[in-house]
Length: 286
View 1: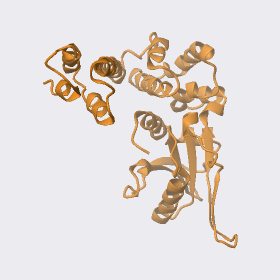
View 2: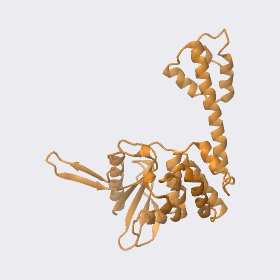
View 3: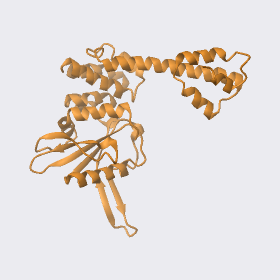
View 4: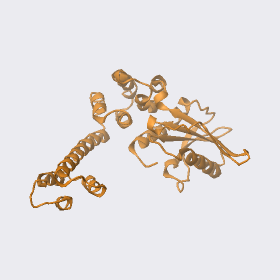
Protein backbone atom coordinates (compact mmCIF):
# COMPACT_ATOMS: atom_id res chain seq x y z
CA UNK A 1 0.00 0.00 0.00
CA UNK A 2 0.97 3.60 -0.25
CA UNK A 3 3.16 5.25 2.36
CA UNK A 4 1.01 6.99 4.97
CA UNK A 5 1.45 8.63 8.35
CA UNK A 6 -0.74 6.13 10.27
CA UNK A 7 1.14 3.01 9.28
CA UNK A 8 4.47 4.77 9.77
CA UNK A 9 3.46 5.95 13.27
CA UNK A 10 2.56 2.40 14.28
CA UNK A 11 5.69 0.91 12.70
CA UNK A 12 7.87 3.31 14.68
CA UNK A 13 6.27 1.94 17.85
CA UNK A 14 7.23 -1.58 16.75
CA UNK A 15 10.85 -0.64 16.11
CA UNK A 16 11.09 1.23 19.43
CA UNK A 17 9.86 -1.75 21.46
CA UNK A 18 9.96 -5.03 19.50
CA UNK A 19 9.97 -7.27 22.58
CA UNK A 20 6.80 -5.61 23.86
CA UNK A 21 4.95 -6.40 20.62
CA UNK A 22 6.03 -10.03 20.68
CA UNK A 23 4.87 -10.38 24.27
CA UNK A 24 1.49 -8.76 23.50
CA UNK A 25 0.80 -11.18 20.64
CA UNK A 26 1.90 -14.23 22.61
CA UNK A 27 5.02 -14.97 20.60
CA UNK A 28 7.51 -16.91 22.72
CA UNK A 29 11.06 -15.61 22.72
CA UNK A 30 13.82 -17.76 24.16
CA UNK A 31 16.63 -15.40 23.25
CA UNK A 32 17.52 -11.74 22.67
CA UNK A 33 15.31 -9.61 20.40
CA UNK A 34 16.55 -7.13 17.80
CA UNK A 35 15.23 -5.23 14.79
CA UNK A 36 17.25 -6.14 11.72
CA UNK A 37 17.52 -5.00 8.13
CA UNK A 38 15.73 -7.48 5.93
CA UNK A 39 17.59 -6.50 2.75
CA UNK A 40 14.61 -7.28 0.53
CA UNK A 41 13.80 -3.66 -0.25
CA UNK A 42 13.82 -4.47 -3.96
CA UNK A 43 10.46 -6.12 -3.27
CA UNK A 44 8.89 -3.43 -1.12
CA UNK A 45 10.07 -0.72 1.25
CA UNK A 46 7.39 -1.77 3.77
CA UNK A 47 9.42 -4.76 4.95
CA UNK A 48 12.83 -3.14 5.28
CA UNK A 49 13.04 -4.17 8.97
CA UNK A 50 11.90 -7.28 10.80
CA UNK A 51 12.30 -8.58 14.35
CA UNK A 52 14.85 -11.31 14.94
CA UNK A 53 14.49 -13.53 17.98
CA UNK A 54 17.74 -15.21 18.98
CA UNK A 55 18.44 -18.22 21.15
CA UNK A 56 18.96 -21.89 20.32
CA UNK A 57 16.14 -21.82 17.74
CA UNK A 58 16.13 -18.32 16.19
CA UNK A 59 13.31 -17.04 14.00
CA UNK A 60 12.00 -13.84 12.43
CA UNK A 61 8.76 -11.94 13.03
CA UNK A 62 7.42 -9.56 10.40
CA UNK A 63 4.73 -7.29 11.88
CA UNK A 64 2.74 -5.79 9.02
CA UNK A 65 0.77 -2.65 9.88
CA UNK A 66 -2.26 -2.00 7.66
CA UNK A 67 -4.67 0.94 7.80
CA UNK A 68 -6.50 0.51 4.46
CA UNK A 69 -7.80 -2.31 2.30
CA UNK A 70 -5.32 -3.96 -0.03
CA UNK A 71 -6.69 -6.54 -2.44
CA UNK A 72 -3.45 -8.51 -2.78
CA UNK A 73 -2.30 -8.13 0.83
CA UNK A 74 -2.07 -11.87 1.55
CA UNK A 75 -0.20 -12.59 -1.68
CA UNK A 76 2.19 -9.71 -1.01
CA UNK A 77 3.01 -10.78 2.54
CA UNK A 78 3.34 -14.43 1.44
CA UNK A 79 5.88 -13.37 -1.20
CA UNK A 80 7.67 -11.21 1.36
CA UNK A 81 7.81 -14.03 3.91
CA UNK A 82 9.28 -16.39 1.31
CA UNK A 83 11.89 -13.76 0.42
CA UNK A 84 12.79 -13.26 4.09
CA UNK A 85 13.25 -17.00 4.54
CA UNK A 86 15.37 -17.19 1.41
CA UNK A 87 17.53 -14.27 2.59
CA UNK A 88 18.00 -15.30 6.26
CA UNK A 89 17.30 -19.06 6.24
CA UNK A 90 15.18 -18.71 9.39
CA UNK A 91 11.51 -19.48 10.04
CA UNK A 92 9.33 -16.40 9.56
CA UNK A 93 6.06 -15.53 11.31
CA UNK A 94 3.94 -12.76 9.80
CA UNK A 95 1.48 -10.83 11.98
CA UNK A 96 -1.00 -8.57 10.19
CA UNK A 97 -2.13 -5.74 12.48
CA UNK A 98 -5.24 -4.11 11.02
CA UNK A 99 -5.62 -0.62 12.47
CA UNK A 100 -9.26 -0.11 11.42
CA UNK A 101 -12.26 -1.89 9.86
CA UNK A 102 -11.54 -0.42 6.42
CA UNK A 103 -8.42 -2.60 6.25
CA UNK A 104 -10.39 -5.79 6.87
CA UNK A 105 -11.32 -8.46 4.32
CA UNK A 106 -13.04 -11.87 4.53
CA UNK A 107 -10.00 -13.30 2.74
CA UNK A 108 -7.80 -12.60 5.78
CA UNK A 109 -8.36 -15.99 7.38
CA UNK A 110 -4.85 -16.72 8.61
CA UNK A 111 -4.18 -19.32 5.92
CA UNK A 112 -3.35 -18.96 2.24
CA UNK A 113 -3.27 -22.08 0.07
CA UNK A 114 -2.27 -22.47 -3.57
CA UNK A 115 -3.82 -25.71 -4.85
CA UNK A 116 -3.33 -27.56 -8.11
CA UNK A 117 -6.40 -28.43 -10.23
CA UNK A 118 -6.53 -31.87 -8.57
CA UNK A 119 -6.60 -30.31 -5.10
CA UNK A 120 -2.96 -30.92 -4.21
CA UNK A 121 -1.73 -27.92 -2.15
CA UNK A 122 1.64 -26.83 -3.49
CA UNK A 123 1.99 -23.90 -1.05
CA UNK A 124 0.48 -23.19 2.36
CA UNK A 125 1.13 -19.88 4.10
CA UNK A 126 0.01 -19.44 7.72
CA UNK A 127 -0.07 -16.02 9.34
CA UNK A 128 -1.79 -14.23 12.21
CA UNK A 129 -4.35 -11.44 12.01
CA UNK A 130 -4.97 -8.86 14.75
CA UNK A 131 -8.09 -6.73 14.26
CA UNK A 132 -7.60 -3.87 16.69
CA UNK A 133 -11.25 -2.77 16.81
CA UNK A 134 -12.11 -6.22 18.25
CA UNK A 135 -9.38 -6.13 20.89
CA UNK A 136 -9.89 -5.40 24.59
CA UNK A 137 -8.17 -2.06 25.43
CA UNK A 138 -6.81 -3.24 28.80
CA UNK A 139 -4.00 -5.46 27.44
CA UNK A 140 -2.75 -2.50 25.39
CA UNK A 141 -2.95 -0.12 28.33
CA UNK A 142 -1.06 -2.58 30.52
CA UNK A 143 1.44 -3.81 27.91
CA UNK A 144 4.79 -2.23 27.08
CA UNK A 145 4.44 1.53 26.71
CA UNK A 146 4.98 1.34 22.94
CA UNK A 147 1.58 -0.33 22.57
CA UNK A 148 -0.32 2.22 24.67
CA UNK A 149 -0.95 4.61 21.69
CA UNK A 150 -2.94 1.80 20.02
CA UNK A 151 -5.49 1.61 22.86
CA UNK A 152 -7.93 4.17 21.31
CA UNK A 153 -8.22 1.93 18.22
CA UNK A 154 -9.39 -1.06 20.25
CA UNK A 155 -12.96 -1.95 21.23
CA UNK A 156 -13.69 1.21 23.20
CA UNK A 157 -16.80 3.43 23.15
CA UNK A 158 -16.37 7.12 22.34
CA UNK A 159 -17.85 8.16 25.68
CA UNK A 160 -15.12 6.15 27.43
CA UNK A 161 -12.29 7.97 25.65
CA UNK A 162 -11.65 10.65 28.33
CA UNK A 163 -11.06 7.93 30.93
CA UNK A 164 -8.98 5.96 28.44
CA UNK A 165 -6.79 9.00 27.73
CA UNK A 166 -6.36 9.51 31.49
CA UNK A 167 -5.16 5.92 31.83
CA UNK A 168 -2.87 6.36 28.83
CA UNK A 169 -1.43 9.43 30.53
CA UNK A 170 -0.58 7.45 33.65
CA UNK A 171 1.66 5.24 31.50
CA UNK A 172 3.02 7.65 28.91
CA UNK A 173 3.78 10.57 31.21
CA UNK A 174 5.96 8.35 33.37
CA UNK A 175 8.41 8.23 30.46
CA UNK A 176 11.16 10.84 29.90
CA UNK A 177 9.59 14.00 28.51
CA UNK A 178 10.91 13.74 24.92
CA UNK A 179 9.80 10.11 24.71
CA UNK A 180 6.39 10.92 26.19
CA UNK A 181 5.88 13.66 23.60
CA UNK A 182 6.77 11.19 20.84
CA UNK A 183 4.25 8.63 22.15
CA UNK A 184 1.48 11.24 22.40
CA UNK A 185 2.17 12.33 18.84
CA UNK A 186 1.80 8.71 17.68
CA UNK A 187 -1.46 8.47 19.63
CA UNK A 188 -2.69 11.69 17.99
CA UNK A 189 -2.04 10.38 14.48
CA UNK A 190 -3.50 6.95 15.15
CA UNK A 191 -6.67 8.31 16.78
CA UNK A 192 -7.24 10.29 13.58
CA UNK A 193 -7.99 6.99 11.85
CA UNK A 194 -11.26 6.68 13.79
CA UNK A 195 -12.14 10.14 15.07
CA UNK A 196 -12.28 13.67 13.68
CA UNK A 197 -8.91 15.38 14.12
CA UNK A 198 -10.52 18.39 15.86
CA UNK A 199 -12.11 16.05 18.42
CA UNK A 200 -8.79 14.29 18.99
CA UNK A 201 -6.97 17.59 19.45
CA UNK A 202 -9.58 18.71 22.00
CA UNK A 203 -9.39 15.38 23.83
CA UNK A 204 -5.61 15.59 24.10
CA UNK A 205 -5.44 19.36 24.66
CA UNK A 206 -4.57 19.19 28.34
CA UNK A 207 -2.25 16.21 28.13
CA UNK A 208 1.11 16.81 29.76
CA UNK A 209 4.02 16.71 27.27
CA UNK A 210 1.71 16.92 24.25
CA UNK A 211 2.33 20.58 23.63
CA UNK A 212 6.08 20.02 23.92
CA UNK A 213 6.06 17.86 20.81
CA UNK A 214 7.33 19.85 17.84
CA UNK A 215 5.73 17.24 15.58
CA UNK A 216 2.36 17.82 17.23
CA UNK A 217 2.66 21.58 16.88
CA UNK A 218 3.60 21.20 13.22
CA UNK A 219 0.64 18.86 12.76
CA UNK A 220 -1.78 21.42 14.18
CA UNK A 221 -0.40 24.12 11.90
CA UNK A 222 -0.60 21.77 8.94
CA UNK A 223 -4.16 20.82 9.84
CA UNK A 224 -5.29 24.43 10.10
CA UNK A 225 -3.67 25.26 6.76
CA UNK A 226 -5.20 22.20 5.07
CA UNK A 227 -8.58 23.23 6.47
CA UNK A 228 -8.28 26.72 4.95
CA UNK A 229 -7.23 25.30 1.60
CA UNK A 230 -10.05 22.75 1.52
CA UNK A 231 -12.68 25.32 2.43
CA UNK A 232 -11.43 27.75 -0.23
CA UNK A 233 -11.46 24.99 -2.86
CA UNK A 234 -15.03 24.00 -1.98
CA UNK A 235 -16.19 27.63 -2.10
CA UNK A 236 -14.52 28.19 -5.47
CA UNK A 237 -16.13 25.09 -6.99
CA UNK A 238 -19.56 25.97 -5.62
CA UNK A 239 -19.53 29.58 -6.86
CA UNK A 240 -17.82 28.65 -10.13
CA UNK A 241 -20.43 25.99 -10.94
CA UNK A 242 -23.22 28.49 -10.24
CA UNK A 243 -21.66 30.80 -12.86
CA UNK A 244 -19.99 28.52 -15.43
CA UNK A 245 -21.76 25.21 -14.99
CA UNK A 246 -20.64 21.90 -13.52
CA UNK A 247 -16.88 21.44 -13.32
CA UNK A 248 -15.59 18.42 -15.23
CA UNK A 249 -12.98 16.06 -13.81
CA UNK A 250 -10.05 18.00 -15.26
CA UNK A 251 -11.33 21.28 -13.82
CA UNK A 252 -11.89 19.77 -10.39
CA UNK A 253 -8.40 18.32 -10.52
CA UNK A 254 -6.96 21.71 -11.43
CA UNK A 255 -8.76 23.40 -8.51
CA UNK A 256 -7.71 20.70 -6.03
CA UNK A 257 -4.10 21.04 -7.18
CA UNK A 258 -4.02 24.69 -6.04
CA UNK A 259 -2.75 24.93 -2.45
CA UNK A 260 -2.09 28.66 -2.44
CA UNK A 261 -4.87 30.06 -0.23
CA UNK A 262 -4.34 33.64 -1.41
CA UNK A 263 -4.66 32.62 -5.05
CA UNK A 264 -7.82 30.63 -4.30
CA UNK A 265 -9.31 33.66 -2.56
CA UNK A 266 -8.44 35.86 -5.56
CA UNK A 267 -10.16 33.37 -7.84
CA UNK A 268 -13.27 33.37 -5.65
CA UNK A 269 -13.46 37.15 -5.96
CA UNK A 270 -13.06 36.92 -9.76
CA UNK A 271 -16.04 34.57 -10.21
CA UNK A 272 -18.27 37.65 -10.63
CA UNK A 273 -15.84 39.40 -12.97
CA UNK A 274 -17.84 39.97 -16.19
CA UNK A 275 -14.67 39.71 -18.31
CA UNK A 276 -14.33 36.04 -17.34
CA UNK A 277 -16.71 33.73 -19.19
CA UNK A 278 -15.64 30.19 -18.33
CA UNK A 279 -13.59 27.95 -16.06
CA UNK A 280 -10.53 28.32 -18.27
CA UNK A 281 -10.52 32.05 -17.79
CA UNK A 282 -10.95 31.70 -14.04
CA UNK A 283 -8.17 29.13 -13.74
CA UNK A 284 -5.80 31.50 -15.53
CA UNK A 285 -5.79 33.71 -12.41
CA UNK A 286 -2.13 34.23 -11.51
